[in-house]
Image (tube, rainbow, N blue to C red; front, side, top):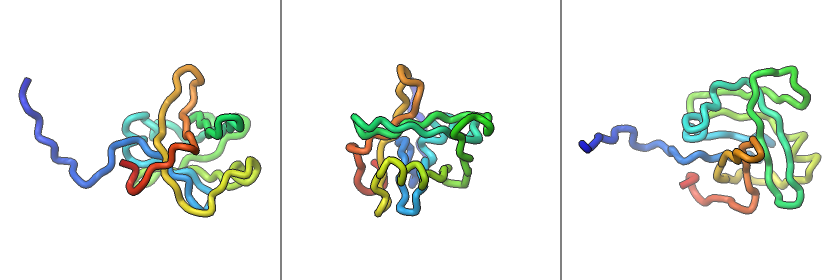
Length: 122
């Protein structure tokens, strides 16, 4: 097998979700690329109180019950989640980053609020 030159330096490719202090959930470029999040226009949020996890279902039908718009930018995407965070009393006093993983059994992208990452999500 031949070597392949890596030229995309300075970017984080590990899928990460950020819980922003202003009440939004952000998804980095790594999450967008790995999970094809840019293919979707909306998301539906779920909360697992027992395990302190947020579940996210990305969808293309904005009329689905509970759908929130997915806003896309150059470095990632985000959804407004302030009402959700306040309803479930999820602390968002400061911006925090978490690994974003897909759970095939549940059919949801999962943010485990006990697995906060340090720094740039590495």
